[in-house]
Length: 329
Image 1: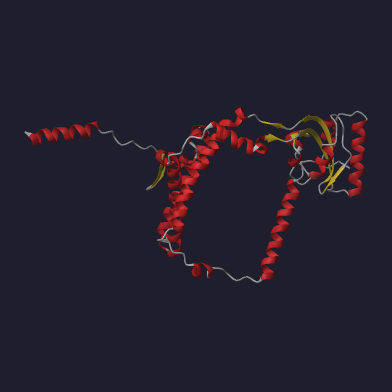
Image 2 (image 1 turned 90 degrees about the vertical axis):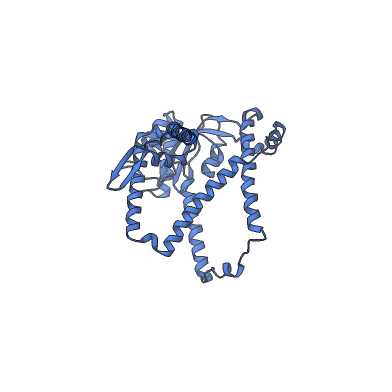
């Protein structure tokens, strides 16, 4: 009798167990398939609070499914070609998996670590020591015209900028003049309005002129590598510091995140310095390649020049090199 009852109990347990979720196939080619479970696993990389919004974009969903299918079918072809059997490739695959699992474990540690609450008094201390972080700089509202150098000498561009400024001072609408004369490629985006900008957000030469103006005044032509700029000040927003009550929750959240991060950092440091960890300094030093000093210096100079060129380009209000449209002199 008892075995019979046991069988009944087992059957009841099996019948009450939830059935495995049925996956919906989204795309299939032979044995290669991508399901909705694959899609949802991929979307785990999106923060939970943003995931629904991301999945509301049908075009993006199509691209994700296509990416998953492309990766899966190409990976299968790579396995057929034996690429995963190559010793170096096998190590790289393992490294990718280790990096992913390491990140997941760090996230697990930080989520599960018991973190003490951050009292409001501590948040206030942090606020007072970081006032600059919560302080907005002075800002000027500007309208902008650029007379570029493409097809012009410096003298021609300076004269053209002076002519445009004279027309503005005589009463012509500044934005209408911008529409007619500017070479700033950003005009299509902003219509000649730079908005409220701080001194750190625009070229320092333009900032020096703009912050000396009063509302309604127009600067003399300001020279930069992109040409000559005219700016009209239309408003001013003085520096202001956000109140503690406005940023308190963000400060507490930031401090909690820092404390959670410390958990994994301390654990890693303990592993690095632990008695069972042996570092082969000579072996690591032997990995260093020998490159002639002159070659290193040449490459360093090239990198510095590249960065300087990028910084110069980004300092232009439009962030793009000016091109004079046809018909402008």
